[in-house]
Amino acid sequence: MKVYIEPKPKARLENESINHYEIEKDGGSSVDNRQYKTQKEANESAKRQGHNPILCARVRVTDKGRPDHWRNCE
Image 1 (cartoon, helix red, strand yellow):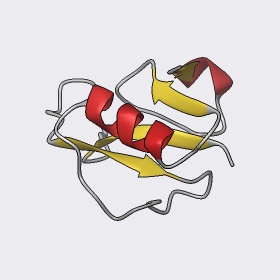
Image 2 (tube, rainbow, N blue to C red):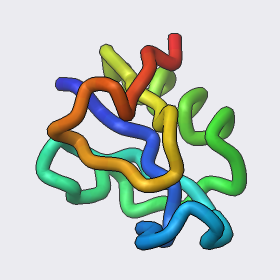
Image 3 (cartoon, rainbow, N blue to C red):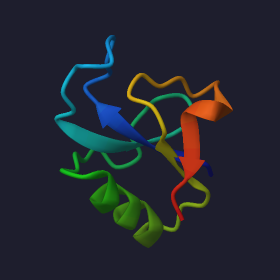
Image 4 (cartoon, rainbow, N blue to C red):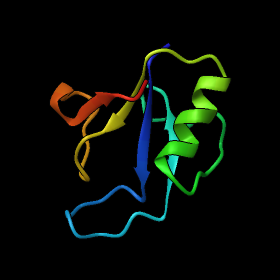
């Protein structure tokens, strides 16, 4: 299953602060209902959980339907 390391809260503007990261499924629901301080921590946890591929945000305001908003974390 493809998962996304999503910055939270969901930003409406580029300058909104990121409080944490979550591992999400394609539909937007959390994989493990946990909050991670850093993108790296979320990525490492997703790997330990056996997820592949893992996609990290390239931009602050994300859309899972836009491949250019994501990069491979591995």
